[in-house]
Length: 401
Image 1 (cartoon, rainbow, N blue to C red):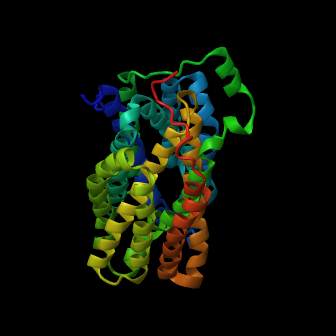
Image 2 (cartoon, rainbow, N blue to C red; image 1 turned 90 degrees about the vertical axis):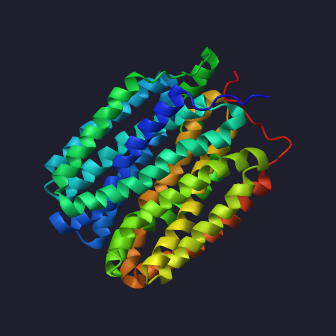
């Protein structure tokens, strides 16, 4: 039997747009703390808040965007998100105080949240049901490649040019995204009057999808664990006099995920989610614990291998679980719920961990989050795997209804 086609024009274009959206996010999040300290004389907790408040804006946007994407149109909301992301990125030119930085970061996070939720919803409706795990893992490569190229590009540009030129680059990239959306053909939800009324109702279920609460709860704690890498790896590497290895860390991360994610997607479809989810917790834990004791470049880069296998595998396959559990017209709400939890963890993590830095140091932060990542495996079993009714669990086809 011939495989259903995965690599359509829409799949490739949506994935490319998502890649560019995430490039901007990762470029700025790894340099914004250092920029706040350098130009605005922020303390370490204040710099951590500058990194994290962006995610809180994203959190608010995702809460509202899930249902709006299905009600008002997936492509229309993608346009709106990118335009707002672009306009608020331009506001970085006017930074003159920490308060202004916090406002701009928060608003910028809203634009990013709408745009990235729209791309994830669109791609989830494009992928054939029988290739769901494989397709989402390929799509998620756009995020992991951005997670490598973005921080690397941001750190290199920060060493060579002023912050103003970095913002110029981001504006050009987002304008390119707007042009690309013109050529994207989007499959919109077919909403009956009954389903439209259901989505319009002001209920908690229309902002947070109940069927994905469990996996989203795990995602929140995984986000906290990974936030220490995003928020403080550059500063930690500088403290260890391993700045060169710190710059390459995200390259190693991306290479590992590029090789591992396609295989993880196939295993998800053939063997089930547990076959890929449990190893992800163990690998992330190993990577973070290795970071806590590293003193040499090779151990720092080896930690990047394990962090990539761990967090990279979890993020994409957690989304695949969410899509599996809901019908087509609830995909937007399910995807937004999952990323709300993940982003909340990424948002509060830098501030909490930054506040703990003086007490336990960066090594202590990575040891703590390494133990927490392993505990997430137990949490996953308790709240999701042990309660899953394999025979009776509804699995919705994306092309159904």
